[in-house]
Image (cartoon, rainbow, N blue to C red; front, side):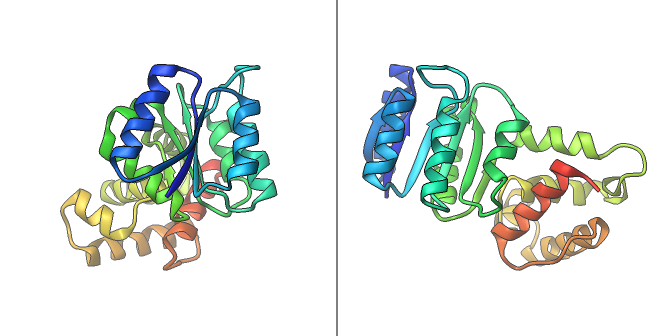
Length: 217
């Protein structure tokens, strides 16, 4: 699996290169600026891009915008964005086209090698990997008063949070140490209470939940 990596801090970039290579990824390019990233994405056609949001020369959202431009040229290009802080606007821009194959992680997650590598693989496979802190902020925003989230049981809220992170029923069952059948029942209840269409497609299901949490009802 070929990766284009963009990170302006040398030590972190070098560490990510070594980590990904140790898990069987091929590093097609490891760059430090927006222009270099744009060129690498256009020329190398990677399987997945792992991109820091803030890159030279602007140090604003240069990396994110380069990745979004590349996705417009190649719809569905898998992109995992790394950010120092939770910025819901970045997550919203990534999810805007509704096609999946996107991820948004805080840089702290990089230090959990298993979690980070799992996110890269999930995004490369067309799935979605959203940082738990982003999901918690979206849940908090939609859980007050008489909003539909208030109808969910504590267990259903746990399942919803893990679903929104991009986890499959099997992965959620493993995390909560219950059967996959129990999780299927919980997800059916969640979709019914939120008025969402039930889907067996994990990625479509995640995108529906994230759209619901982002915009509310």
